[in-house]
Image (cartoon, rainbow, N blue to C red; front, side, top):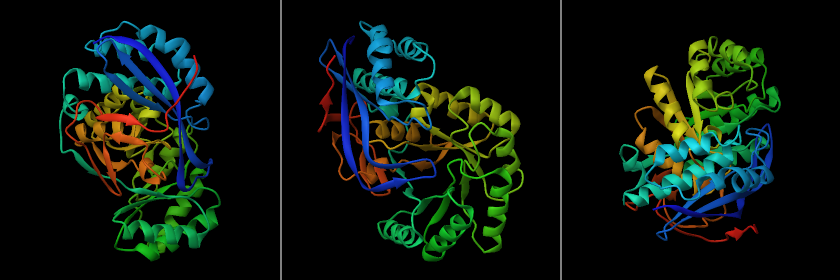
Length: 365
């Protein structure tokens, strides 16, 4: 099974409700989809999210990186030679992690197909059912409370609360959601780099005094401020999770060395795909640091790949934040991983199990 052709397209899916964080507002998924065609007729699927404020990737840069740099290196390569192919992708150009992730996901999909096994089994096996939290976007307090109650009624046992815009209002948002769902759902706070270190410590102390004890606090300070992240980690009771501060193996080594966070959030769009996501999880495991696996605003193509990683690495990936497909108005993917509110299940199909992607818009080359 050799790579014969790489096809690019766009996929656009409206969200059920706008996704709002301290960094941006998104109304629909607009991602680049990769199809890798082989000489045997097999097709592998991948997806790249353009998240300029986090990874620096835009639609234009993703398309150019894959079409002009990464793709030409892979033509003729044998899918069975996975280590060589992933090395070619990683070393094709600097950064461009979302572009690399899309191609790697498609390659791993084909690798599973090559050996007629679901990807999670190729990666080590595990229980093919996981539970995800769901994001409650930063908004008016009444809207956030209503969204939280709706999520709990639909079976979600963990809510990721987006904050980080205005500290005083943030605290009122959190306390209101806590009062509405107390005892029925865990609260995971995500400040999206929106607080200063001392603000974050003060905020958490005020919440604890008010009887609010979040399960974790995610990325309270700027991504580059590891000293500030450590300042918060050393002074609050809730575990602190690094997200934008850690893209892959190099950053996780430094963060662990500094003891700057308690948990690592792994995202394929940050690691550049599955191979470095696995390396990041393995490094964390050696040091006893737990991980979460998350996603950007993505559909069930790339999120499916993250689910397979979560299943295979469930010993160290103890939390799942893969609600991207649940936020979409519909699932454009036929086959593959099944997203049913908080429950995500992996079918016994080769690779990612994707049969078709409806709404795929081919890009002219």
